[in-house]
Image (cartoon, rainbow, N blue to C red; front, side, top):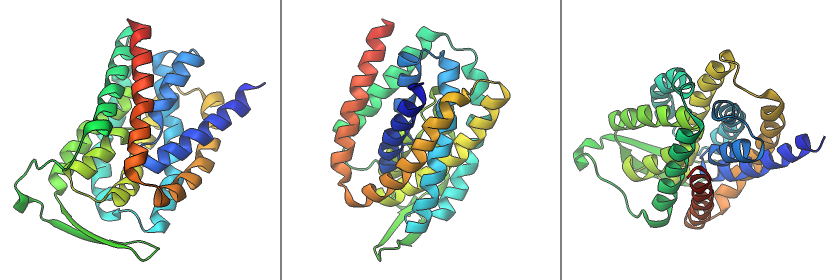
Length: 266
């Protein structure tokens, strides 16, 4: 009887954090669903993807009306997540528990190290190849202009799309740093844009996992309701909070969860 309200509160907290950072929250769903609720990896991943869809749908709507989203780029990159979202669930079906825990914990630790020590932006292509320019003016009167490369974004998003559905993390925890560091998109625009792309990816993933009968709706529904409310809070807080502070806090949480899962497996 206590599980439903606790899941609601969990979804509220993770929805707030996930929307603030544009990462969806799957990095917290999966450890809780496996370690505390005892779900097998396949069900934990499937249920996490379903909650991420609910969360990112609400967050995307808010970011859209806040004007903090590159809508044209989101449309183009959303197409690149389709292969991973469609075929990823079939790969997940082949997982063993030990393999999954090692893979997921290593991914969390690597992301934590990126948030803690990653600095600056990465120039993969010559500066002249960053040839798509955009100007975004949000609902609060702030304007940013930047240049990026769509082809590079498609390749990176294609790979991240597979990663997100293989690990059940939504992909945002990798996609947001990719948009900021590699595609050189301003942080607040990157968060909103990533949220829209995650929404498309998690929708397709949810459909596929539902067909495979892996989604635990009694867990996904109350967690998802909390996540929607959390999304409204997180989107507002993201506008007011220092991105540096959020990244450091997130890195510490990721490191602790990743190390706990790794030690449990070993």
